[in-house]
Image 1 (tube, rainbow over the protein chains, first blue to last red):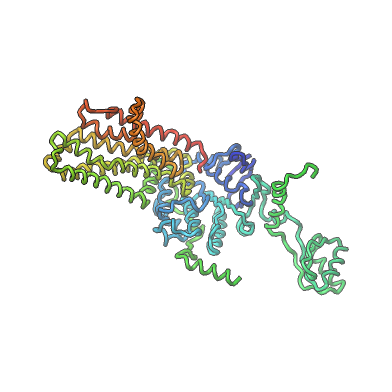
Image 2: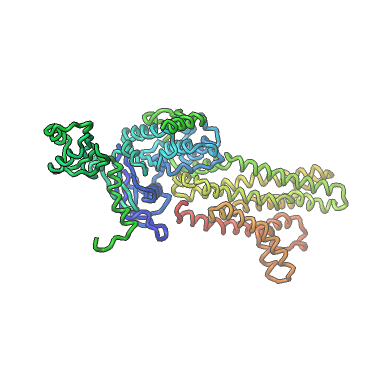
Length: 307
Length: 299
C-alpha cells in the first residue's frame, strides 16, 4: 500500500530522514514511534508530497502521492492541528477543501458529525481549543473517505474521551481493510492502538515489527516477588541461576532467568512466606528505551573507536 | 490524584461542545458523496470559498468602496459650481474624482492579493491546501484568477460607481460625458491598474511567503517608490523620469489620464504601453512565484 525505499531528507546540514525503508499493509494500524526529531513528521510530509525527498522514494499504491488523480480519496492526512486559518468557520474550511475534489456539502456535514463538531461548525476556528482543532484536522482527513489515513500525533491535546475515541476509530478503520499510519512519541499510546510498530531514531528505522514481537524483544520477562524474607529467598534463587535485577526494598525482588513457577517451588521447599508473585511482561516503553538507548548514546557522546 | 481528575472533568465540561459529543465510529465512514476527482474547476471553487469566507476580506472590500466613493464625492462637491468645471474640463474632472481614491485603494487590493497566499503560510493552512492539490500549480493559478476577478468586480464598482456619484453631484450634462469613449477608457484603465496591482501583490506574496515582508515590498513598489522618485526628479538626472514612468503607480496614473488628455499634453508612456507595462510587472512577480512553488518544500 505504502512503500518507502531508501527515503532520505536533508535540511541544510541536518539529516532528518536517513535511508528509511518500510512498507505498510492494509488492514492494520501501523505506529510511527520515536522521540521528537526522529523523522516521523518529515516522513509523513514526504508521503503526501509536501517535502521532496533528497533521495529515495515513497509511494502510495505504486505511485507518488501527487500523481494520483484524486489524492484526497487515496490519503487523508492530519499533519498538524494548525492547518487551518483562524478566521474561517469549521464548515467553510471543510467546504473549501471538499470543493477541490468536487466533494459535496453532505459529506462535509457527515465528517463534522463523525468528529462531533456539528454543534460548532459555524464558529470560527480561531476560538477552538487544541482538541477541537485536532478533531477538525481529523474531519478534514476523512473528507475523501480515503484508503489510507495518516495521523501525526492525533491524540495531542485531546481530552480522555477524545483519546479513547481516536483509538477506537482507527482500530475500526483498519478493520475495514484500510491502512492507518499513526505517529506518537507516547509508547503507551502505541501499545493500545497499533498492530505494527516502526521505531524511528535520529532519522533511521531502529525496529519494524509487530507490536507483540517488539514487546517480547526487549529484556526477558521478569518475575516480581514480595516476601518478608526476601533477602534469604534472593540468595536461594541466585543459587538456582536467577539474576536479581532490582531490589527496591528489603521485601521486594525482581528476578530474571527464572520462572514464577520455580520461584514458588523454591519458596515452598524452604517454607518462605510470599506476599506476591507475578510475571512482568516487558512494557513497550521498556522495549522502546532498550531499542533507542544505542541511538541516544551514539548521539550524545561520540563513542571511542575501541568500544 | 483527586485534583488531577477533578480538573480534567472541569475542563472538558467547561468547553462548550468539547465534551463527549463524538458521533459515530469508523463503521459509518464509508459513505456516498465522498468520491471525487481533483479538477481545476474544483480548485477554483475552493479558492472562492476561501476568499469570501474571511471577514477581513469582506471588511477590506467595504473599506475600499467607502474610500473611493468618498473620494469621488468629496472632489465632485468641492468642484461643483466652480469655474474649473467647464464642458471641456468635465471629462478630466470626472475621471480625477473617480480615480482619486485609487492611490489608496490600490494598497488595499495589494494587501488582499498578498494575504490571499501569505495567510496560508502564517496559519499553516498551506499544508492542508497542498495536500489536497499536490500538483500545486493549479492552486496558485486559481488564486490568481480569483483575486483578479475579485479586484475586477470590486475595482469596477468602486471606480465606475465613484464616477457615477461624481456625475450626480456635478449634474449639468455630466452623465453624457460619462459614456464618452475616452472617459470609459480612463475608468477602465484605473480598474485594470487595480486588477494588475493585486495580481502583482499575489506574486510577491507567493514568492516571499511572509505577510509583513510581502506587504512592505508591495507598498514600496506601489506607493513609496513614487514619492522617492518624485524627490529624485528635482536632481534633474535624466534617468529618473525614464525609470519613474515605468513604475506601477505611474503606469496607473497614465492609464487614468492618457485617454482624456490632449495628445500634446501627455507625458510618459502611452495608454497601451502602460497597460502592457503593468502586465509585465504582474508577470515578473508571478513567474518566479510559480517556479518556486513547484520547487520548494511546502513550508
